[in-house]
Structure formats: structure tokens, C-alpha cells
Length: 302
Image (cartoon, rainbow, N blue to C red; front, side, top):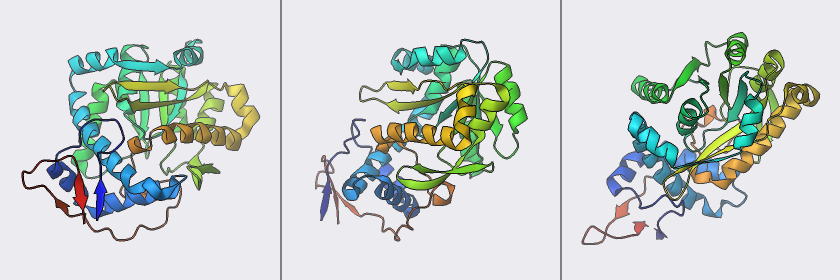
């Protein structure tokens, strides 16, 4: 029998058991998350604990997305947002042109987009993939547009169109931790050999735009921490080449994910990741037992 204490993510009380049960109904999601965390963690001993921490964060993430539709909630969250690297972002935008912001599916980038739009006064363009089912995509689109994000579909957008966005002073957001349809370069990412997109390098060269990383994580006090890295100018992108720039960005983003691995959004379909993960074993949905009074701070799994 395995007894799991409250996840150590610092995000507060565990969600109700019925929510956990619903989340785990598709056993492929639980198995995929645990397989990725086990394959990418320096030590796989705590992979199951991290998986439940990831569950808790995911539950709260979707609840907060709904609240982000409210301008009042976005204003309140903005007051409780810590920004690390504000000067780095200012340097990247000081010319008046845009910048290429490279990130991963970590934390809540919708919060970062709202902050950039409402505080930094810069339009944000996000290159997004289409997810299924359709109503899930519709929900994401509505929330992101409420946060001020201009959406560009990965299957339709071109480098030329994104270069025009940069020339107009917009911030172009690209994700590095998903497979894409553009050119790729082989690099180490999360301890695995990965095929990472080179779009950030191509955009930097074409638009003479700086490139920097940006991530968000939810802190224990309920606020958000936005972290921006030092910008790399177009001349440095040329000097490093596509492989050198993307590998440097990947190393920086890997360090950010390892700060909060339980806030890394892992797809149920592992083919969406840019690296291969050992095929997860068929997962049995854990059976939960409750104390007689229906309460308790532990979840016993048999």
C-alpha cells in the first residue's frame, strides 16, 4: 500500500477526490505524465509524487483560466505578480521594435500575456497549435484573447507574417517544448535528445529582433512569478547559428522547468513532445479509499 501525503507543490489543499477521479479517468493522461517525469527527472524516485503535484496544479490552472475572463480578476492578479528580469525585457524592447519571447508550457503564460499587454503596453502574438476536442480549443482561444493575445495558428502562419508583427512592435511568443512543422535542430532538452524548432533563430535574423526566454510559475502565496532572461540580439543569433542559439535557449528553459516540474503541462499524447519517452505501461486508475467520516489529509492507494 502506498500512502501519498499532500503534494509538495506549495499550491495549497488537495482538490476534492471527485475532481482527482475525473482527471484520472483517462488513464493514459496519468501514465503519460508519470512516464515523462520519470524519464526527465534526475532521480525517478519521486515521479509519482510529482505526478500528483502536477494533477493539483492542473486542476487549479483550469479554474484560474475561467477567472482570467474577468478584467477585475486580472487587475487583482497583476498586483500580486512578481517580475524578475524586468530590466532585461526593457532592454529587449528599448528600440521600439518587438522581441521574440521563447517559452515552454510551464505555469500560466496567459498571466504573462495579460501583464505584457496591460502593464508593458505591448501586444502579444502567440503561435498556437490546434487542440482537440473543438470546445477545448474554443475555451483556450477565448481566455487568451481576453488576456490580449493575438493568436496565430501554427499550421497557417508564416515567418514573413511574424516578422511583420515584430516590425509593428509586437512580442511574438513561441513554445519550444512541442513538436512543430518547421525546421528543427537536434539538442539536449530535459535530459533527452530532442528535435527543437528553429523558428526563433529564423525570426531573429529576418526581423533583426532580440530573442529572450520568459516563463511563469505560480507561487505558494497564490501570486505569479514572471521571469525574463537576458536578450540575445540578432548579431548574437548570427554568431551562434541556429543550433547554438536554440541549444542555449533550451538549456535556460530546462533550468526553469526544473524549478517547478509539477507546473509543467505534459500532453496525454506523448507524440506532441519534441523528444521520445519510453512507452508508459498501461496504467490502472488508482482506487481511493476514504476514512469512515469521508475526511482526511491522506489518500491511500492500493
